[in-house]
Length: 110
Length: 123
Image: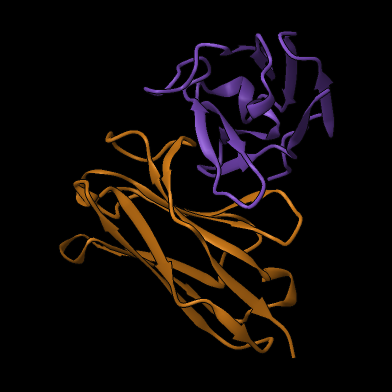
């Protein structure tokens, strides 16, 4: 159950678009359409922003979108805003019926 | 109000045991899978364990398998985590989380989180 691999940090200017990658294996990301993304602001509990690869829960801004190709998932934040500054985690179901999170990516709005 | 409230955290010596509880309200607890997720100080998220709505499907992270036991009481709208043989590396905030899906098994999508309870394992 090794953690999924994410870049440690990504930055962008307001209104720009950024992409966060999440790399796994055929035993997790590549094997299931069960990839989720979370946003965690400092000192707060995580918030679900994407489920089942590309679906947004009610109330999540459509600036957040996501996709998957083979063993890698991606989160795209379009029109970056100051309040998007947070740590983002991906997660996936695994072949051993476990859940694995990514290493986390800190997003900085310049 | 829809919420999850964890309790039971604290300071415990290595090798000892602790039981965490999570009280759910504002939704039909018995319809959803539930999970425990932990986060060490300054560290990332780590899934600990999950249980399906009827307790027929249970999973654990390798790091806690054989030491931790998850359970639920749908009549009491409560989730539990029994932690035995605690180690310093188990020190973390422990979050209770609700699964997004009301289907069988569980998913990696958690749409409601508690505020967390801190477990510190130290001599």
